[in-house]
Image 1 (cartoon, rainbow, N blue to C red):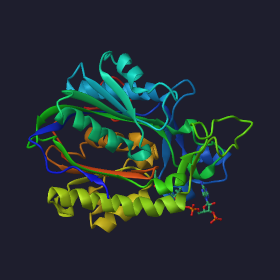
Image 2: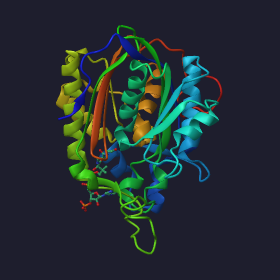
Image 3: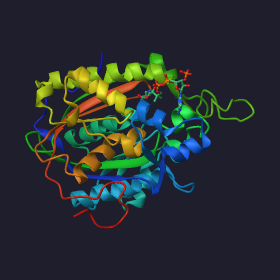
Length: 353
Ligand code: UT7
């Protein structure tokens, strides 16, 4: 059983801006191989990743989220939003949520602001939440951000996860509009299976087990993922959710111009595309140069694909994510006509020509 939006109301949330931000520090595979028992060939073959970006020691999730949010608002030509939703697994602090600080730093004090926690599916859940705020009439413009600094929770000595995860933030702006407009979002499919909550976990630091160094192990205080098992679930759930949302829209795989999945691992993306019968050249990939950036990965892939003009106005886009929880989700949208933007790793002020 999963939650699937029934039909598309006339009033719809319409995507009208995109932006992304990767921290300046880029780390190639060889740099990781210098300090871990790994090598470039293993990382490329098993994950497709060539490099990733890491936040500076003084940078937190909100810093990345503000940069991505600022770019998305500028791309939308908007100075305000009445709600800010931040999807993250690595909030600045356990309390309060990160979104109010992000809103204040963007000059949006007074806006509704809260975090959504659905690990790597977080952005799709946040998008559904933002769209719901609009279709219910609670908000007229919503900034939806996915931001994570996994390098703070991954054990730097854990070779499996240290090579896979990177830091980053991506954002979109939603406004009220009509279901037939380019940019209109929906339907959605969202689901979870908490019976497997221990497959992807940071065991300590919550109300179940406080992160007391005297009472917890190093592994319990860091991000742990049962990679092989997660891989199998990721393929099955992403393909299943993608099919569900397409069925709901009365569409087939052949109607999808661009597939923008959570950037977990290039092998997973290839397997899901094959399972769906979708030619891999329709799949947007960003994992090669950003790694797995958690909740940031889909909005970063959108920002990247828009900046490089891989996404064209009118393209029918399918988003599909999977993550800890376990959680999964998909949604459909038509890509709107947006002003050009810089790539998320471009730290200058002007968009690429
Ligand atoms: O974002 C949320 C969802 N996340 C995902 O969907 C991620 C899903 N899982 C994966 O992407 C993959 O499972 C990993 C990339 C994490 C691991 O790849 P794998 O092909 O599943 O490797 P494995 O765990 O089966 O390990 C194969 C071998 C093991 O050695 P033995 O036992 O065969 O001797 C590992 O110890 O590779 C070893 N290994 C490494 N070797 C070199 C694990 N990590 C590394 C490494 N460098 N970094």
